[in-house]
Length: 180
Image 1 (spheres, rainbow, N blue to C red):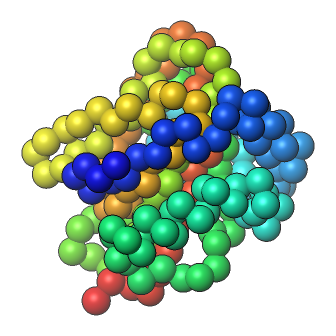
Image 2 (image 1 turned 90 degrees about the vertical axis):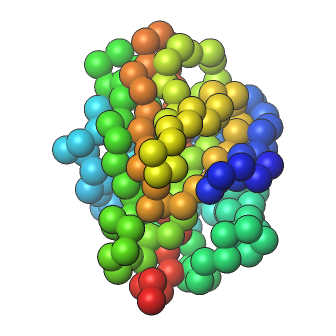
Image 3 (image 1 turned 90 degrees about the horizontal axis):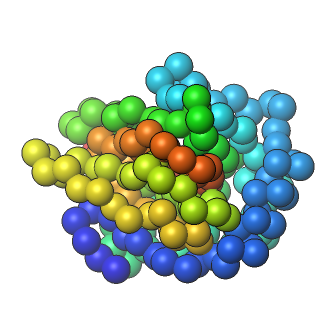
């Protein structure tokens, strides 16, 4: 579905596959890779090396690269991201304030696309995904398990506080040569 500067795929993974993905990622988390954004976000995060989950996330990666080719047209590296983040929002660790995954618009940046896959297996309240398009703020509905969101990393976005339940997502950032 094409809307603004993002693509949304619903039901890319079933609830059973989401549960399996989370369990697999949790068992294979990396002790070597570090999340550099822990100072601004209020969410529990662990990282898994892409090479360890490539088969389980084949649809995830395939859809990101195909969507880029068909819609965004960024020059992306062929190599997959080094790792993917698993973000768990609940109780005290429940939000991610407005931020950019790439640099400010107009500056040199090699992070071009962000992809978020909702792997929550139970309903939750709150945890809405907000994204800015200039002066326009939009809530993108990604609360359904198995939903994949792909968007330009240069857009400000946030996750509102989770007020009930547990929201779990997988996030990855796709890089390419510096913008010219």
